[in-house]
Length: 90
Image (cartoon, rainbow, N blue to C red; front, side):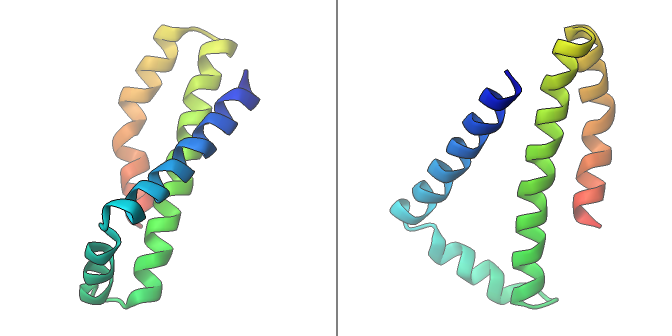
């Protein structure tokens, strides 16, 4: 089940990237990257870190359902959502 979750997340990420390029939103990303005060590399590093952190977070949350229970997974999800957001920003 964990492999299914990892591969489905990976496929969803690939489709998301393709959708950004097909829709032309990559021009907006370039504008945001150019306007980022810390530079283009810092912007790219932040976006990649954000994507990786959320993927790891969701794999862990779904893994809790199989290890313990759905209720415990939901409680951990609600309590840790702001923490993950802050860690990604840092």
